[in-house]
Image (cartoon, rainbow, N blue to C red):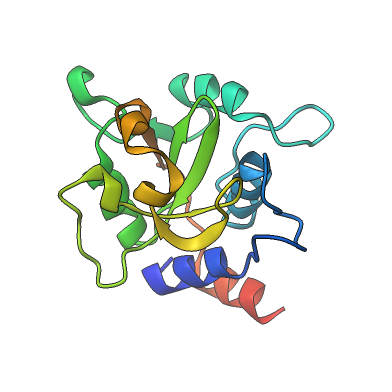
Length: 168
């Protein structure tokens, strides 16, 4: 899928007051719903409800389906924010997660790769819902070292399927 289609699908989800993704603890529902549309599912309960972040994180660490840590070495296994941004910039699903918050990594406006974690582009629901923001808005700077990044390594939604979703 192209970066533009990936961005448009993310932005098709309205977040904030008066939406299904209202301010509060809905980040996990938003992330699960976006990932479902992108055909890159996050774990859900047996009755189809979105797991809490505290339950999603261990599943991702265990390589749930085709999710993998963003880094390649043991020292930075899930801390490689540049790889996560690069993946999103090419239309590949990536998430940023801690035990209590999850966000979708979205393409940067100009395709750039940030030099600082705070500048990674994200879409999120929860306390500060916004589909076009950065890690700096999603997490307090004192928590940036807790954030882990995971990238979907499996099948990607086709451009035709993405266009169909956006046109229906």
